[in-house]
Amino acid sequence: MRSIAGAGNTLSAAGGLNDLILRRELPVEERVRRCLDNMRQARDLSLSSGIKVIFAPQPFLPQKPVKSGLEALLQVQSYRPVDELVKAYADLRRGLQVLCMPGRVFYMDCSGVFDSERRTVFSDMWHFSDVGHALLGSYMANKLDPILYTGRDEKTG
Image (cartoon, rainbow, N blue to C red; front, side):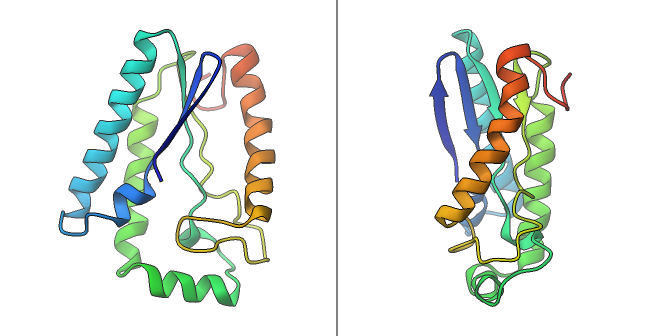
């Protein structure tokens, strides 16, 4: 999913899974490159208007260590080979970290937010239930507080 949401003078850009899963006719490395190009453009446009940017890769089903029966089925049915997607998502997250700038562009890795959740949270490879949204919202609220009020995060200082 690539979504961009603004609040005041902060932009949150959550990139990746649609860019990586769709357009299968392109090599996965090209899909990662294109996604990062889009995120770089969003970053630069936002910064030119004095808007802080937060890259927040979303929860990622394949890395969830204990999947419910439904989640295991969803993963098998959604994307093959899953190892290709796992590598691509790791490359995307590394690329987003490179785009960060202290005090201006932040990184909030949400990909593992559901890792300890034993209930079914995912409804397909990249969407999740109301329970998942509540968990993600709580996680992001705790991480956003220092970024919004001090201009710091744990990655960029």
